[in-house]
Image 1: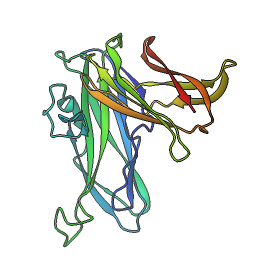
Image 2: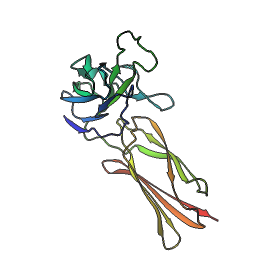
Image 3: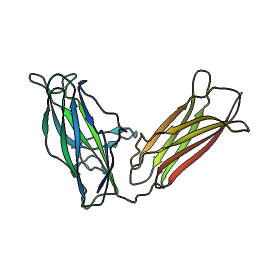
Image 4: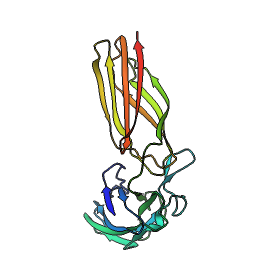
Length: 257
C-alpha cells in the first residue's frame, strides 16, 4: 500500500485562533489486506495548553452534492471503520506541537474506493461547558482511498454556459462535472482564449488540482476569467484531465460588439 500524497487541497482549519493541523488530507492507494501507518501534526500557537480528542467519521456529500462530514458508517463508501487511532485524547502544550498516529487498514471486502475523516476536536477547558460559543470546535482531515488501476472514463462535463465579459464583470464559464465512476477524481486542466483570425492569445489559465469529486457526485464549477472587453471574435478551449489519460475538451466561441 502506498500513500499517494497529502498536499494542501483542503484548507487547513484553525480553531480558537490557536490550533491547526498538517497535513490536512491524505490519499491512499492499495489492495485489500494492506495497511499503512501515518501521522498528523497538531500545532498549538496559543499561550495556554489545549486538550483535544481524536476520532473518526465519514467524508461524503449530501443530496445537493455539497461536501459533508457525517458520522462514521453513514455513507455506503465509508472507510471510517478502517481507521484506528493510537490515542483518543492528547494535550498540546502552549506554543508547541504534537503528532498523533493512525493506521489505515483495507479490509477484504473493500469497494474500489472509500472515504473517511479523522476528526480532531478541541475539548473545553476547566470550568467551561462543552459546546460553548468559541469552544469545542473541530477540524476534519479527509482520508481518501482507491484501489490501483481505476479508470476515469465515466466523468463528463454537462450544462456548459457562459457569461460574456463586460466593463464590470469577467468572463464566467459555468458547468457541471458528473462522476459516474466508483472512485474519486481531482479535475485539473486549462482554459485558453484567443482572438481574431490571427489567434492572438488573450488568456491562458491553469486549473489547479484543488477540488475533489466523489463517486456519483455532481460538482458545479464556475471559472471567472479576466478579459478586457474589446470588440472582436473570440474562441476558447476548456480542457479537463481526470487521470490515466482521461480528459474532456470543450470549445466555445463568442463575439463582443
